[in-house]
Image (cartoon, rainbow, N blue to C red; front, side, top):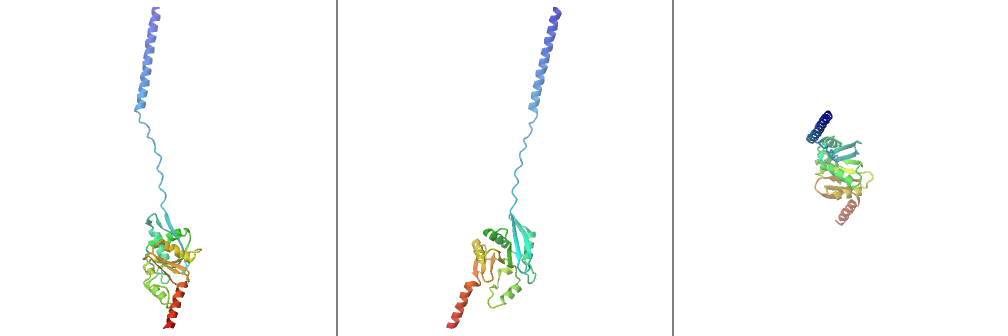
Length: 223
């Protein structure tokens, strides 16, 4: 019996020791878990900003028969390579001289296409840059030519244009609505002059010219 009692006490002590060790191990595990830094939460990448708007012009030159499709501006920055291509395309086709265009003229063309709801239309170029020699030549072809002595074409600020599928009158009205510079209406020759000089407008040819001619003849008879 005495042996049994001793065995029982020994077993009880051993059991108590095991239980204590178990609790201690559990506590250490809990402390270790508490001390392990939590895994950082990975934030979702911010959405990439949308691509800046590209400004493209599609042109056809009626004298050189050349075509050009070029991005001249991205966002608010002009692309020099595209601007250079436009300067060459709009050269004086009589002398092959080029000039640096006022890039606002390209913005005017782009705005005009937007106004007409034809952003992908091709613009026919009747006349771009003119040297003083070419300008004087055109002025002397007849008594009345409609070519200004101090034309904005010589300053690389003007282009004479047509847009297939758009009437000359509608093209003129759209250009006038922009208020971005001068607008010349040439209904007989069927083109519109647009420039980024002072805001103004005029007409050469059509009823207005015929009326003016009749007035001149009438005054001659009276004189």
